[in-house]
Image (cartoon, rainbow, N blue to C red):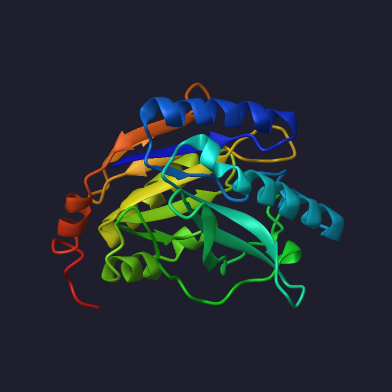
Length: 258
């Protein structure tokens, strides 16, 4: 199974260039599973403290358009997050799982843990979802997701381990200056869950309104780093062994009862 992570600049014309490069990489690597960053198909709305309904609506449309064309990437399955509007008008951040078999993006999890601070005014922009962390399923894999800040709530990594997740995906929008801390967290949740931890992040040059530092990763269930992204190499692919992830559930510290 080949998996790919990335860092993308979502700002206007830059996004199209990154997506073209990502498509080429995915096809050359014959990627099976692709992880995209948090709300990666539009400008990062939460950089502004004051919510704007029109901008949210536009972001919804942008994500709908790109998700409708995910088959162009050539991956067999894709996970990311998207802005949505519920029937009652509530705005949410939804993790979806797209499959080439159905050509549809299934809802998996709505972000529950929401920061609200400079550059990341998420709780001001949208509402938290239900406190449920369900599995997605694709390519004979059980796939868990913790959206960005949710990674730091390690009880859910243990939950996904008990649920026999093969992958634990962390789509992010996280700043420059903290990338090493986030990578360490990704190694920890991989060990906690006994799953491969994948993360993709937004990126923009330092000093821009969008404070996003990139560094996607692929980490194995023992915390070993298999691949990372960088400014020079914004896309990274590694081959993973699902049998290793499944066996890891029986070894330390995963077997230790709660």
